[in-house]
Length: 515
Image 1 (cartoon, rainbow, N blue to C red):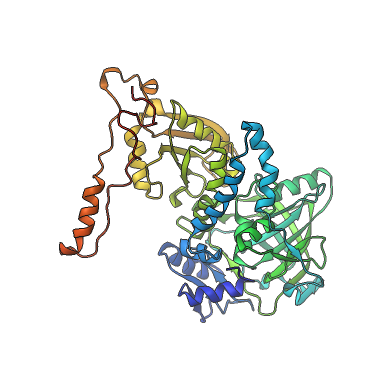
Image 2: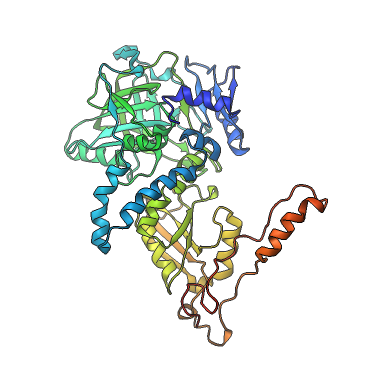
């Protein structure tokens, strides 16, 4: 099911019991954030604040704060359905012969398969029902949040920021926080590893201004696509069309040469002068710590367009777990796993648990085939897009359940010798990581938590690597059948974890002859 706009999505959430309305007035300065934080931490519903102090606009928060709401946002019963669609597409190209050259030749074919080009409407769209220019604009009336006491101001936290490469006109849509500096000024937190910063950097090199449009609201698939870690060159609006099953409708901005979502709630249009910088931040970010910010470029608004009765969405950042774990982490790792497996077919699964705050920890389940394979897989992932920002990569065997972090840590710690299986590297890191030795640069740790081959240990007389103790499937099935007769209440289910896959007798863990 494709939602036309944010309002349709809000209606669907309310019908499913996933949305609560708050009619009492709420202050966007800290109070709303405290309410949302409690909802996020407790697995609570989305919330629509209908009366926000100092603003005529309702505020919608925690829209994507659970796996169920993420699935609803993308119109599927389960996020795995989106992954299956991608897997079928990658299965088509996986059959191409030619090794590395075949993989390179495949990439141009993959983009059209994924792309459902957006459709431009003539004569504007609903988002341009109201058009304000010049002194009519006052961005201070938007329900922007001050989330934490040490924040440097109020921020728009779920915008889709649209730019175009000044040379190629290739589009980028990304979610970057925006600080409200004044009636017609927004601070743009363009992190150096993101597409918007690339466009800004090229404009700055050429000494030219860059046009920017900021969309607030819109259909949920488009909001997600703006936040998704897409490969370079994949258009976010086209990917949103793939997710929706129908094209995203766009319209030309009223004061900038950029296309904007026609069914957004609101769009701020403007320009950025490369030399126009203002202090941005501090900001309590998704790491759970304050990002001190710094001098960042300023968007000077030339127009503000909106629908009548526009609703503004926001996402609260802070100590995990928060909504961004579902919006940016859990959804993306499920959806993009087939693309990772296209490059690394021996990787069974990846998972960044909420406690890792997106970049601090990445679990990898690997079908290990030879000595050193765990390190090779980790090297490959650290060279893949924004996974390069991962700080700690823990590799375990493919039968380990990554979405039960306790099980993943149990397997990794049982199978590792820190003196042998921990490898420290150096590389790029998140600009929000305060612990790194340099700004967005520092150390990384790879931990090989897989069973070791003789070549990796020199175990000699100590014998083969031990098998995990797992209950037999027959006994598990028998107890499951008998549980209702035991008088112990609801069956909590087997707790022994997932057993290693079956393999022919006499073969080692990898399927090769055991030593």
